[in-house]
Amino acid sequence: MKNIKDYNLDELKQEFVKLGEKPYRAEQVFKWIYESNTTSFDEMSNLSKELREKLKQEFTMCVYNILRKQESSDGTKKYLFDVLDGNAIETVLMSYHHGYTICVSSQIGCKMGCKFCASTGAHFARNLTSGEIVEQLLAVQRDAGVKISNVVFMGIGEPFDNYDNVLNAVKIINNQKGLNIGARHISISTSGLVPRIYDFANEDLQCTLSISLHATTDEKRSAMMPINNRYNLEELMKACKYYIEKTNKRISFEYALAKDNNETLEDAKGLVELLKGMLCHVNLIPINKIENGQFTKSTNENIMKFRDYLNAHGIVATVRRELGSDIDAACRTT
Image (cartoon, rainbow, N blue to C red; front, side):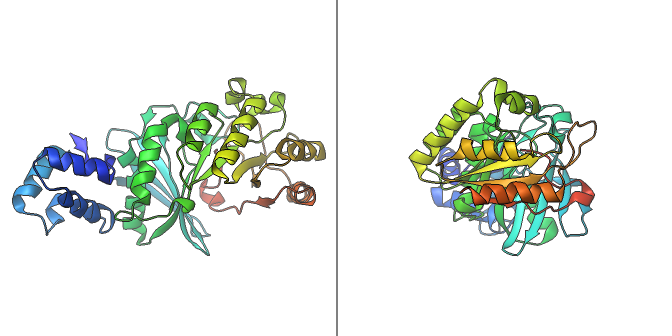
């Protein structure tokens, strides 16, 4: 059966017409699912019993079970959800002064093999559907009793390797009759799938694009991120410049600082040279040690020196606030 949460509103209207129903009924159901966070068709009280029965025959309603929940001393919550097929995914809820941010997964496992990322140890099983991505928000809101205001696609998986489902999930999240989270409050990260960066530039979306960069030479980046063997820095930078020119939006470059690897003054100089003239921001990430990983966290002194050098040479750089490190929820991924 079809998961009703896999459909954006326009698609759902088309499905209702096929069922002989008026399109406005689809809007009613959409509001029940996303505004009211309803978990059963039976709860949709403004629909006839006949229609509710028809919906139960045609659709399932993906509702996650919580397998494990951990809470950090700083209030960060990490969830392990049962995706109802024997697999599980992680989702992280973070609290900031501007509201609640959720970090969602886009795949069960990951193919990218980045050497510093905890997802590397997670065997790739499959892509998540649009509804399975969106259900992460709904499940967290039900459990935590909060309204999520920001979404980052930076959990397990490469979002651009699941491009169509991720973009459809964005449509659902962004819809005013649904979760109504503004596109400017949605950030999508990629390890550097160059063809999809061009595609994304042509989508005319207001979402933020984040690029996992982490090194300024092909030799060093390929050692950290195998995707660089397929799309090198020259190709990646060309795509990024196209995105900026096409959208007039800045790119957020993610740069995880690893001790004795990519944290030197020469690395900082290389980053300034690489990003010169680009509309961008650099998000410096204190890397977290992963099991069997070769990289360890740079010192705070070196992180601050790196940041200050970038800022002094015209590249806006900030250090990402670490949240949830005591429950292994801090950034370890793209």
